Amino acid sequence: MDGADAAEAVLVGETIVAESSKKQEKQPEYITVNIDAPRKYRWSTGKYIGRTYKEAKENKKLVANRCVKCKEVLWPPVQVCGRCKVEAGEDWVELSQTGTVMQYTYLVYPLWDPHYGEKFANPHPNAMILLDGGVYIRHFLEETDAEKLKVGMRVEAVWKEDDERGEGAADVKYFRTIRE
Amino acid sequence: MATTRKLEDQDVYVYEGQIYIPNTYTAGALGTRVLTSLRDKKKIMGIRCPSCNRVYVPPRLTCKDCFSQLDELMEVSDKGTVLTYTVVSEGNTCQPVPSPVIYGIVQLDGADNGFVHMLGGVEAEQFRIGMRVQAVFKEERKGSILDIRYFKPLS
Image (cartoon, rainbow over all chains, first blue to last red; front, side):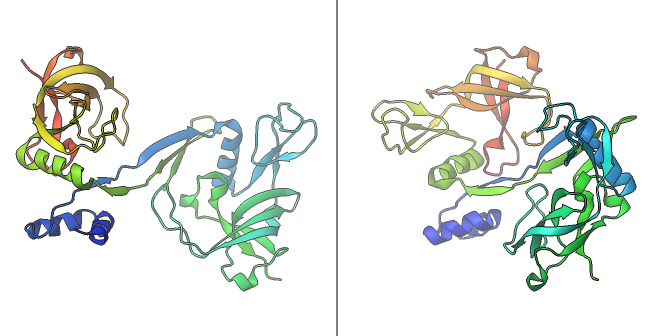
């Protein structure tokens, strides 16, 4: 088996082993090792992120808390304000679901989700959106035509179906262009 | 997809996900010879270093001490001595068999280093360091290191 054949055996895996054992006189057999086990993990959202999970799942709302001292809206919600180093408290505010694209990436390279082995949508536009009220959120855009993507375009959140929600901010499917 | 479940009476969710990165690699020229002899002849192979006369199980192509190129494959015994072991009770999707699994390091007769595999056959409490064990092979072997089911105590 020369170098090119060996490389093919690595790619194709067990099928090549079965074929090469048929013609064993000519070619030596090469064994491949397959590792095919998902690693499971779980984490607790905690009290603050848990609130965004609840509001997104049950009420289709994006919520954040405000620092008691500087009144800054903290997204994602946190227990301690990063600027004032004080307990941020339970001053919950609802975020606007419309905003302005401040920056975007138009991703055309095919990517796989490493968690479940599924393909990402392609092309896959991704934007930093300034929600009305002054909070930045990173999310996907519905618009897949690169010509129509512009900094400054107005977008609104589109939510997933009821049975698909339960993953916090990922319950927003994407942001859709507001056509006026 | 990932699932989340809410804890009772609290606004706290548990996020349950996974990372799935399957991969395939070739066992190589030496690894293929070792795994096929395990599969076809139920023989565990070692390799001898010509300059320091040490026998490695599983075989390797380069001596870790003198960097000699090794090619002297030889059969070692399927019996050995337990050098150390540990009992894993907590489950994990990556382990080869369901919990509890006893991982052990066994020095096979004729080898100079320990061989990492599983112990089994009897309850975990009955294993001791220094115990004599023997390899148990699977009936249906696929050319994998798991063609050895585990090492059981020699009575």
